[in-house]
Length: 132
Image (cartoon, rainbow, N blue to C red; front, side, top):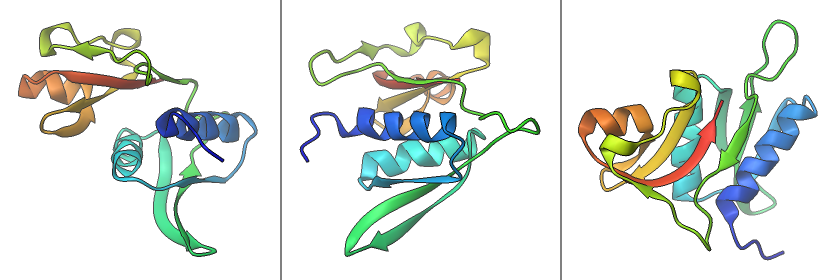
């Protein structure tokens, strides 16, 4: 199976698993995906994650998080930049999700970080995705 946008594929798997109330979801591993998952963990959107080897293939196992009413913590997750349309932003123009209640994940020259931390460090970059 050839996927033209592996990040969008990962985000879709997480979104679909959360809507179907799955406990965990496995995605193929890469350095960028691992950094995005680390941000999702620190921002409180997922319970935990771990790298596992399944049938000789390295995958990231993401444990999804739900609230007291068994509703997913991730209400929405969408890709901003695509392979055909890259979206960049300077640190002064970084978008805010729902007046600060969502998170923008940005790939900067100092690594993958949230939009809030990128603005504090005064670095812009490619907008990867929105999570709310």
